[in-house]
Amino acid sequence: MSMLLRLLSNQQFQIIAVVQLFNIFSTNLLAPVLPVYFKMQGMSESQIGLIMGIVSLGALVVRPWTGMSVDIKGSRSITLFGQVLTAAGLAFYFWASGFWQYLLIRFYQGIAMAFYGTGAITFASGVESPENTSAAIAYFSLCTMIGMGIATSIAPVIFSGYGFFSLIFLGLASISMATSLMWLRSNEVIHCGEDKRIPFREVLKAKEVLAPAVCLFGSNFALGTAFTFVPLVALSKNIAAYSVFFIAFSGAVVFARAMVHQINKRWNPERTALYASLINALSTGLLAVYPSTLTFTLSGALVGFGFGIIYPTLAAYVVDRVSPANKGSALSVIAAAGDVGNALGASVLGIVAETMGFSVLFAGATIIILLSGYYFYKALWVVTPSETLDV
Image 1: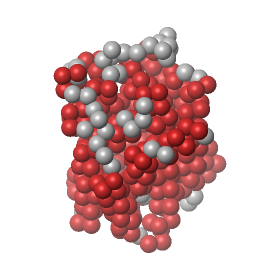
Image 2: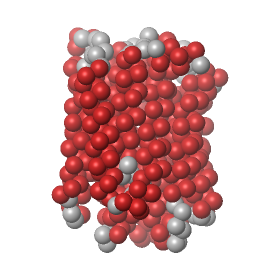
Image 3: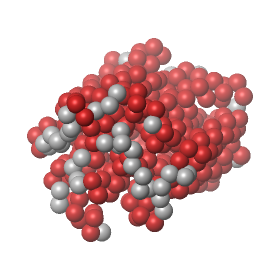
Image 4: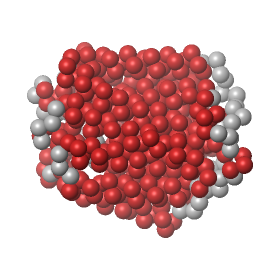
């Protein structure tokens, strides 16, 4: 509690926390309803999967650039640039129709997410002293999950009652408030000069960056798979209450983000991340065995808890082991791995769903999550939390 009070007394942390909550709320309002909206327009599972997954491809192609831009130009300016792009991406839906236009919008939204996300997490990791960085990232991530949880819980209700474009208007209002707050109240976080940085490829090759990236890939693979295909499998089996998955996810992920700092104080981050990977695998495994309202609820709670634990744990782990001059680049690497996981979980598995069914899809996702966790275990289990990279 004392750490939380310390963070809440830090004005710059207050600002980035509120900005994150409103920004994430705006970008996640569409997440649970887009697959259903596209299905209502007659699109196939593979088309829906491609549209949902390409957002991560858009983020992936600019991640190295966003990381280096943050290290050179500072996190505040890159965060603001990402927010402007995000608002434009939402507005484009007013004029979109057809597969190719939606595909381009989602690709563009991925670019916006990359700029905002890399800038915001770097900003949050720099507003406190080094010994409190882990707590700052944990509580910053809690705001992420509160925003995501509220958005994904209320979006199906608003969509059913008021239609798709009401969500666009609400998202634009939220991102406008977040951008105004960041522009008017935040100050640039001091960052190291270019002469202290090492090449991006050296950051990428360091196992203390690469192994967490692979682990996060598995976590986001689980999340992308579940978020895209739970509504579709519910439609195929005439299960009306698919929103219980998102409600359970929301509650679990907020609880996990609130507790992650305490969990990491008790266990080392390697152990915490590995157990979170196993929880994610159990979530998709349940969906493979027997999709129902009950398993939707259990799966949402499990993936919410696993995802809620794993990202702040891995982000803090990486920040603790790289020099401040390379922090933006290192965080962009693990974020890029998460982008790949989201993209493959949504797009490639859409083809699997169409040809082999949803049970095979979720079983395949479970295997990939377990393999990612195993690589992380083999690469870093012997590395102690006290070791630090000189990169």
